[in-house]
Image (cartoon, rainbow, N blue to C red):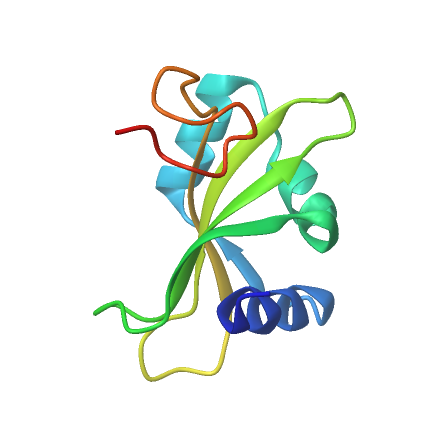
Length: 107
């Protein structure tokens, strides 16, 4: 498992979480609630990990929602900060750009 995702899960479990305005906008466009991603984080898997990203460590995470939908979300932790976990953006992955399990980008 990604160490970034593990840190994010720990922060979320303590209630140290923030949802960016951009994430709220993207989620609303797709008819998904931020709480669905927060509650599904424990069963989500890291697709890509960016521990050295300039704005702080982040990870692309695949969520499986209760209704069966799969959502990609980018979660991060602000640079030089220990908290909070930030839901940066989220979207429904395009099947034309991802493998059938939505874990590998197509070339």
